[in-house]
Length: 129
Image (cartoon, rainbow, N blue to C red):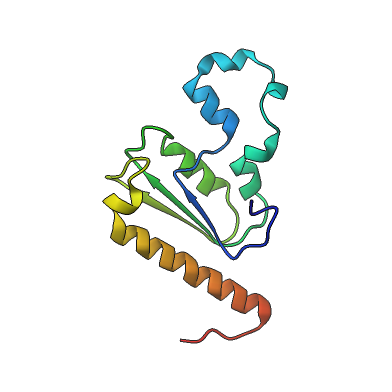
């Protein structure tokens, strides 16, 4: 979506590196199918994050049993520019804002601060304190 619409920041919560990667991890037998059977690179988050993008916050629970935490590490490593990886050690896939509300809110605030600073820098406006 961020490649199609201008946005001030990106949040990836419990995200996967690419559709192909997560599909092969869940269903290893898919390796026998040709690449053209998978959707185009539209769901290749790593490929997207290698391009310039607004400030990024990646949030992932270490206990996630749906999408392994390693996906968030791969996303973070691939991303260029302003980025943060918020790793929540006691959190699973769907309980991030409930099991770690303080860390979640602080991560969102930091993203908003980075987005505001980037917007101010690009428009030449000084940041209010």
